Image 1 (cartoon, rainbow, N blue to C red):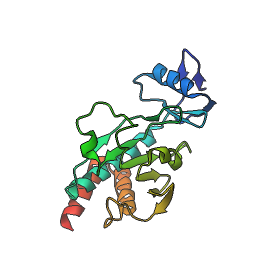
Image 2 (cartoon, helix red, strand yellow):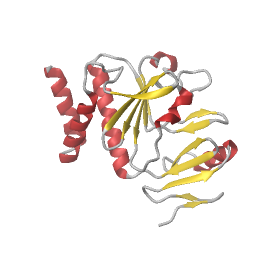
Image 3 (cartoon, one colour):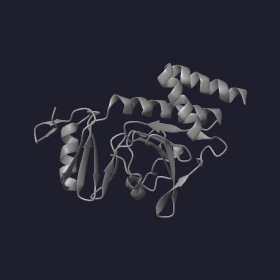
Length: 210
């Protein structure tokens, strides 16, 4: 099955990634054409438009890792807000749709809001991305100065904003005393051997016993 991108039709087979030269106006037109569709996802950077139709594996991993984050935040008694889907946009410069994002330190700034103004409101504190098709680039989040990005690419990579670049870290600023990479791997393994609910219950039980 072939990818089709025309002014009337946008169709991508699962797993397809399409890169197109385009302006900010082209990106906005495609976004409007897609409307509320969850697939394909769309991204704009440096005069390039990227479209991707995620595989089922992608959605499952996103769900599991987001569950892990929520369980860890609840374990710490940390209040938060979580969003998916959501589009981050800086007009003429960047447009991106994180797989999942969390407001942790800045949750009060966006609590109760139906719309977020990226020129005024803070960016998410933590973004979760799954990269199965080499679509994701952590540097896409530099314009938004997202403090931390978790990128799953066969293993969990934790990127922390340091000045004007992201560096790979071994721990999360939000869970400094928890080996989140190990926790994520264990939960993914249990979920694939049994199911997601078992993985999350096991994580809650383990945290409660510590």
